[in-house]
Every structure is written in C-alpha cells, then in structure tokens.
Image (cartoon, rainbow, N blue to C red; front, side, top):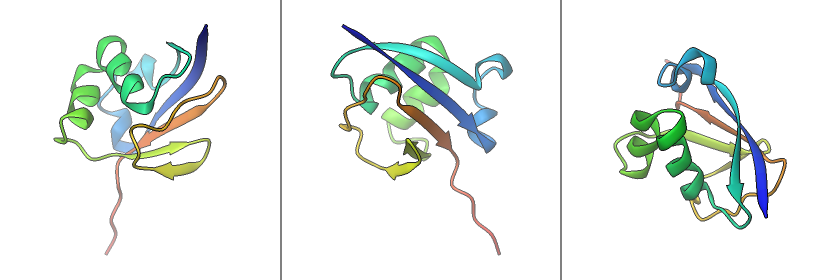
Length: 91
C-alpha cells in the first residue's frame, strides 16, 4: 500500500528546488520514514537538497504536521505535511 505526503520547501530551502516543485505531493510505500522521503526528494525534486541533508552537508529544519523533528527514522503517515526550511538567525 502507498501513502501520499505533501512536501513544502520554505525560505532558502525553496531556493534549492525548482520553482514548480516548492510544494509537491509524493507517494511512498507504507512504513516509509523521513530518510526514505529524502531519497525520493533526491530522485524526483532536488538531488542537491536530498543528498545534502542525508550526507550531513546541509542542515534544514524539518516539521511533520507542524512539529519539529530531527529523527530521520520518523515513520510517515498518509496525509502528513512535511515542511523543510533553513534555520534562520537574527541579530
């Protein structure tokens, strides 16, 4: 069985993906994790972003249904909304 998740790339993370892919609906096998999602993002949306996060070269804030997580083993559910955004700092 497949699940569908909505993925949104905000702020500077949005600059790492093509403009028409800043909001995408992706299908993954049931039981998929954020790590699996990043592999799909690497293949279908932005290799630079997906591989960058997986390899630790790119640090992004990840929110699943509005809740921040750093756990790439987080299991995704059908209908989840995942936001990727760059950490912002002010002064």
